[in-house]
Length: 147
Image (cartoon, rainbow, N blue to C red; front, side):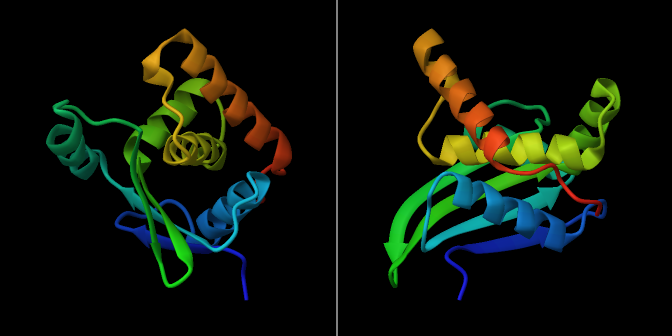
């Protein structure tokens, strides 16, 4: 039995579910989580724009959104949901000159750090703690394998 559960829902093409699941397991292991469930949704700019407007009152697409849960059911902690726009991820990867997988890895780490309770929008000190956690996770997981 795996220590953690990762649920992946893809509404668009671009990445394999196995890649996303494997990556998420590595991130959860890196921060020492056990019996934790994480949901990942890979979607379009159109859908993430709707979610961003509904939940953050920002009428534009974004790269990643996090929806923390923190509930416990049947001995499993429900960490929450990370939603990634493949459209924005693809554009950012091209702009940065990196692979789509590398950009999605960065976004997934970012989303999970939010689910862990960090918030870079709460001031300089919290932004530093947030970035430190992102760098820590990045250093603990190996480079992604091909899709």
